Image (cartoon, rainbow, N blue to C red):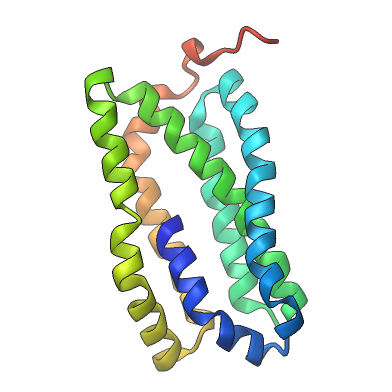
Length: 178
């Protein structure tokens, strides 16, 4: 989800900047997402230590989707930038949450394979993401690159729902640093 979104945004950003008359904020639309992702990662770690990853990861997906909707419906580049910041907040929770879930759900001997699959999950979006995003932008407009991504986000969350239920409120995630 995050990999496809990153490739898709890189593909459609020139069109977005032109359409919203926002060339001066072009680079910030990328940097702000990353910066807000780092901020949310620093919040997500201790939160997940105390409460487990389930709620925070689910919240991350909801926040990410909200950011996609803001960006996709944005009438100005400033509003689009706000949507990108919100996406960044959500992506930080998603990233940390997935790492925690992998650490808790998979036995030691399988984790390296899971990390390989996670890394490989960036390959397919890098290969087909620009084609898909460009096609969507050409056929129905750049906004639908953002407005259709929530469907992928919800589908992705359903794929890990059972694993989240297994680690929900897991007391072994409590931090000794309280």
